[in-house]
Length: 370
Image 1: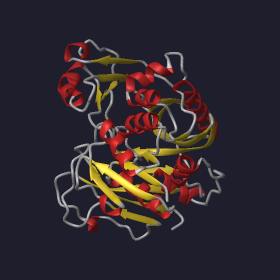
Image 2 (image 1 turned 90 degrees about the vertical axis):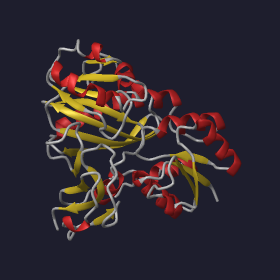
Image 3 (image 1 turned 60 degrees about the horizontal axis):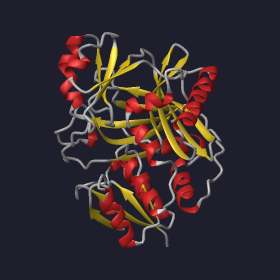
């Protein structure tokens, strides 16, 4: 029986843990805390920080583990790739590429100013540098955080002054990026690559909480209703070009974009499965299982056919969100028409702060045919 180590044991990892057990693998997991919701699903757990690369290497060698991976975590990907390189384990991309994608400014530098889907940006390590910025409106973000933490729209130097320290506080590297603000609908592309070929790509609409900062996710919609066939083709072309420039040739990829008119602009490139369970929505909609493809590719060297067979209707993944620091109330939500339902919290369990504004408490998949 092959052994897989999953880095992290939070809600985003539960899908991966369950699937790997269904596929017949022995599943190990680690996290800096022993309270993550995914721990009961594991065969083996050790309390170990996923950033501790030497510790991860030692644990893999001690237990004869065949591969290491993670879902939905930018923080985990550099560890996954570096550890796999060190130990000669299978992996999708280089540790250098992973580090480039984790850093928003390194990603934009790698794409290049001449790249169609790129936008102007400025990187700052102190408030004095940030206050020199004048190309408003802009988005201010930590260069290396995830989950929309520390992201703010800024329309003036006063806004920078008000939010700079909060944004900087989420950056491990101690830097903030200011990017041209694009005032258009958000879209996403979930894709899969094998040997440099984009085998599968689908465009979805990304619906955020408009009254909260930083683009905090509320819903995903498939098929996209804000794009035309021409815009979707252009979007996938931009994604394909980004993969080439960033050196992503294998495995899953998730790209967040905005539309500037009919021009797709890249916001984030993550060489991994997203943290929003989009694989599940996609599988319901067109019977392509990107989660299974990733682990089959990683552990068996085989990518299953990724041929979409779309179902009728408009499909939605809706998060069941509540504010942090309050007891979760499942009864607040109508889930009577859910095609799929998963709760992160039990009734009365206090919601943990992640982005600090509105946290995911579970999700449901719906179809407008219901």
